[in-house]
Image 1: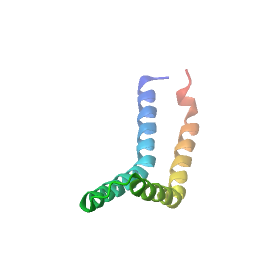
Image 2: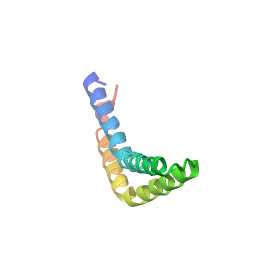
Image 3: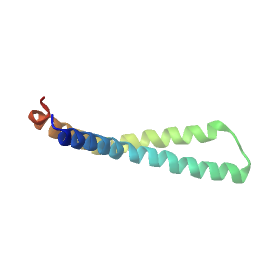
Image 4: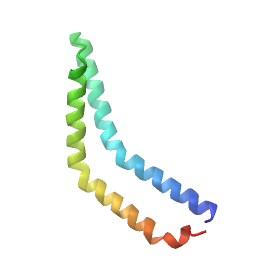
Length: 89
């Protein structure tokens, strides 16, 4: 396998991981920041008040974006397996 093919494969895989994980991580992060601001303003420091909404928001985000994520992942797998002859030693 040529070094450039390996680098391209690694880059595509890394970008796919970022693309698939970014929406879920962003929702969790933004909701966490919003809840932290509310907790600071109200002086309520209960851990479950932070965890439960983030858990539900992450689950809802995964459910809503699952078709898009699976479509991206299937396209990536098709391209990867379609170019299998390029990865032979």
